Image 1 (cartoon, one colour):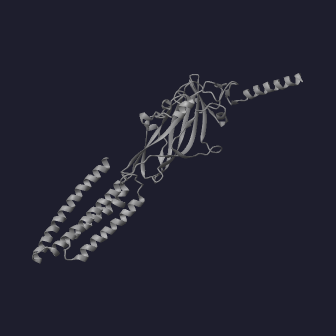
Image 2 (image 1 turned 30 degrees about the vertical axis):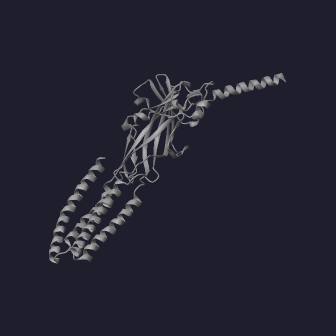
Image 3 (image 1 turned 45 degrees about the vertical axis):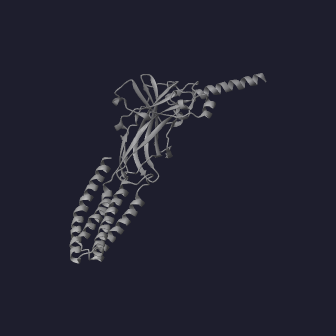
Amino acid sequence: MQCGAGIIKLLLILGGVTFAQARCWGLVCLDAGYQKAERPAYRVDVSVSPLLNEVFKVDDLHFTISFDMWLKLAWVDNRIRLDNLNGSSRAVFPSSISNNPDINTIGLVDMEMLEHIWVPQIMVPHQKMTKCVHGPPFHDQVLNIVVKNETVWVDYWSLIKPTITCPMSFNWYPFDVQNCLMAIQSGFPIEFMVLKSQHKSKDFASFHFQNALIDYDISILPPPPDASYIEMGGNVDAWHDFYGVPASSWRWSQTGFVFNLSRRWTRYIFIYYLPSGLCVITSWASFLISPQIVPGRMSLLVTLFLSLTTLLVSTITSSPTVAVGISALTAWIIIQYVFIVAAIIAYAVLLAYIRFMDGEETKKIISAKSMDKTFIILFPLIYSVICCLYWTVCICH
């Protein structure tokens, strides 16, 4: 019985050794004592390199941006062992183009290794959904091992297609500019893991191209300095009692980039601004019509009023939702409304003057013509000043 138990123990030991030795992928091996749950060091610096590929959609209705990008993570793990590095045929870059003999990059095909090594935990906040396809024949994950001056780096690339939410404000629509932070957060406190971006501002969109139908000009900016970490921002007594650490001292490292969305507003000139402006200019022709011709003058003003009503309804329907106040486009249509209504009121004043004021009919008509001459000078002057102020404020805001 004791002999049988000893044989079983021996088989288990041999099985464990065999399993440890089998944890090799080409030239890359893990020692028997490698623990996936342990970090390579007390504090791990993870280099993050997001590379934007394409922006598919900017949804003003749901406040989201859909895009795809390569997310590159690199960290040091000297517990990984390399065998026969000089004889490798897995080099990513040919030796003929290598500029530094102290740097060797080994490309790995088998992604199974990720299941056996420590991998940094990261999160993308405000993420609505993510789509990605893994496995052959799609090449959307790449794992390399880079040896730099005898330091072993794990170099992991992943193609992701996230949809993130963005706090958009449309008060200046269609002259609005949105800044949306694509944040990448550490899953470990800042004492244990720090995310560091390797890119300059121009490098984030090295591969970037955007859908031609998107209503924005898109540029990529680095994250603001105050976005390098996040903190809890308050004390939660229940957590303090459970963990023994005040929640106000919890901090996590963060990096990423900023979508700078500048709306292309020139097409709105032909859709909304020019037609509504022409309605106002046309209304000034009513001052050339004799006040006695009531059907002709009134029908012109009422028709213009109804046309602006249709344009206003279209504006409200097609414009993004504004939480507080109105948009700049709606404000413009209201300004046009004011001038049309002012022309109607001016005509009403003329009719009241002719009908109810005492005096000879001829003198009242002459006075009415004089008032029309004043209106035809005053209205364009006031309208020009307001338009100049409007366009100056909207373009330079």
